[in-house]
Image (cartoon, rainbow, N blue to C red):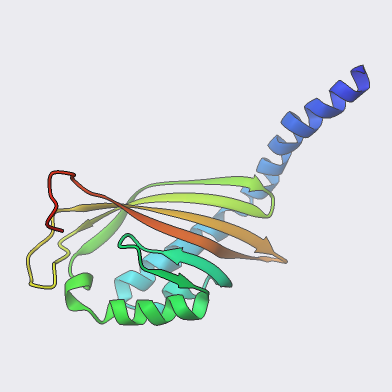
Length: 161
């Protein structure tokens, strides 16, 4: 029984720690993918923003719009980037964490502040706080986003936006 307990400890405690350390060397690749998204938004480059999604990725934005796969995500971003009121203002990441669940699976949470965005009628929105929840899977040597959920923290007293 002691041998079985030792194996259980390794599987449940020690092995995930080693997996986390090995996977941590892939953290720059995950950060680069997130930076591609950010730069794509800054430069209105839908191809750059969408290039790291898998062909079957699930994507949902803060307004509940859903798309499936890299091509559909890029198509929607092309439309969004052409809307001046949406693209008004600036975004900056304010917090980010990346956790490797397995050496080939990572979960990233990025909190972003957007200032100066406008409504379709031109009114300036209050600063927005969004969270990006991304699930990454490594296939071979490359990482792809397989799921991306964007949530928007809004003041419950303001129902106009």
